[in-house]
Length: 260
Ligand code: F6R
Image (cartoon, rainbow, N blue to C red):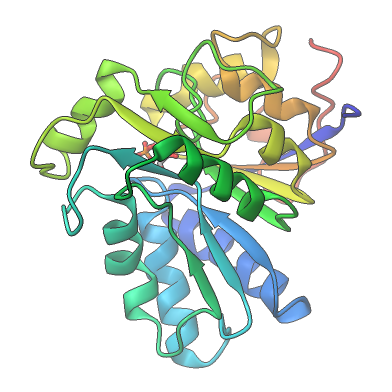
């Protein structure tokens, strides 16, 4: 994997979701059959609301697109409100007027999670766009600290803090301890990657991800190896980045490799 340049877009918090949605609308207008992997969580929720509104206005269609889940909990029953498939249906897919051509959930209900991960790894090959969030501990998907750039889609243990979010924030029936995630190797192979980061509480980890030596302590740091990575940050998340004010969108690309 050759090293690339991350393009950083710093957006006012109030405009963040609409601006990122407009970018996705443009991508889909140019390539109706995009294969996109999607995260769940707090960060993308307003983006999904903006995308649904755009679809209802007729500005965009997912009718030929394939939506692939980035990760999913193991141990939560079907229909659990914290399940990733439930969240994506609730916030995006179930609200579209025309559903996507394919929605590729992760089969976590079968008897063999490792086999399900291997199947999802094949689905994750050839992604056009990997849309990602940043964990407060530096994770991407469920690629928790300790994960590396060669990791494929696999069954993982999730950090205790990650599992707790499922119960405290989303009302999971049990606190999950494991999941299946698309691995960094596949994410780095996607034609394009977007890292979505909002809020002051992510500021330090975003700084580490972009400006500290890449390390398994911060798996998101490996995203700098991606040849086409765009970081969509709001002003609060970008506050620790050098010259973030000067890089308000539209801004210049910043070299992120070699490490500075
Ligand atoms: C969820 C996922 C996670 C989140 C990350 C940030 O599918 O892949 O890596 O993107 O934990 O979560 P929020 O956006 O809730 O802060």
